[in-house]
Length: 185
Image (cartoon, rainbow, N blue to C red):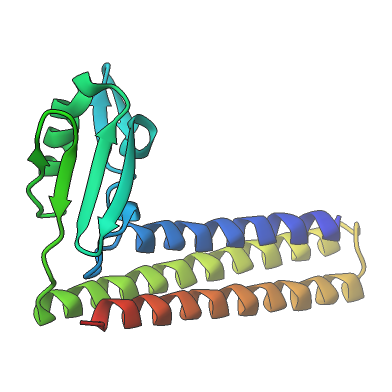
């Protein structure tokens, strides 16, 4: 029972940190990164589809992304989706592929992005604390229902605390890395 509780708690914490990683991957830095556009939703045959599923995305240069649709007929839809996104980059469409020139970020924009990264990290930590609270509550309920002993409950809570310490550190490390990346010129 306790093992199941700990496993479920760890899985939930892992998912929370993975969501942060995905958000950071899509966050713009001064360099071209396929993660910047891979999750943009493109209306493809009536279904919103992530760009990475309908095109290959590469970064041949530090400030350029090249998008090659698998189906050349979808290039107009991809173009529209990129323009509608909050990237603020105009795609250059030559009928076969799309080029995105990534302009350098201003100092002010870098600071704004760093603030956004910090906010995302804080939201992740709040999610981790909520997961810990739920797991501790479940451990208390198991003890109250006489399914586990008091010692087992206390041990479970210690393990839950170790999990949150580990995932909080991962969150801090991710934020530090992203913040440093954003502030590079």
